Every structure is written in C-alpha cells, then in structure tokens.
Figure (cartoon, rainbow, N blue to C red):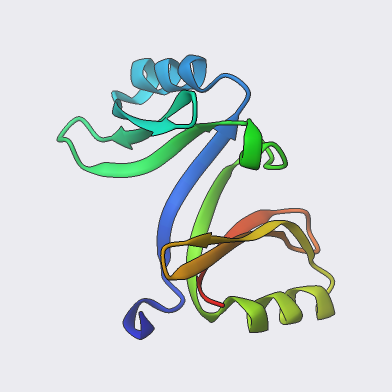
Length: 123
C-alpha cells in the first residue's frame, strides 16, 4: 500500500435516506448505482454513466450512525494509529472508528477547521 500512501482512495456520503440522495444525484449528474447488502437494508456503490464505480452512498444507521452528512474522502496512510496521534496532538478530533475492513482499518477525523476526512491503512 506504500505506493498509494497520501492518495485519495474512496469517497462516501452517509445520510438518513440513501435512496432519496441516490436518486437526487442520479438526476443531477447522471450517476447509476449497484446495491450493497448491509444487514437488513442496502447501501449503494455509485457509478458514472460509463459504469465506473466512484463512490458510495450509505444510510446513517447502525455502525454509520455517528457519521456526518458530508462527502468524506478517504486517504491512504501508513499507520492509522500514528495518524490518529498526530490528529489529536494537532487539534483534530476522532469522529468514528477505527473500524476493521479486511486487513486494514479506517477512521473518520475532523480537522481543526471543522472539515472531515477518512484515513485508511494498517493499524
């Protein structure tokens, strides 16, 4: 993952009504979607008109209940733990996580200006 360190990896939007917002962006920018089964509901992988998966739109439920309704970009880091220490020491906040995803973890932080970003990498 070293060659990806510092690069944006993914973007998600987490909202109370994912279907409404999915349909909004479908009409506004031409996106389509594929459902992603989550527990007893579906979130969505968002695709360009050409079919490229570029983002996710998720329901603000369960483990995603703490996430703000904002487009969150995820950046690859070498060590999520080290990045979290730096975040807090520089005045940032940990909003959600860390959570496991396969062999890596991700976390949502807020910078001192109030903006959100996700970090993804090894613990």
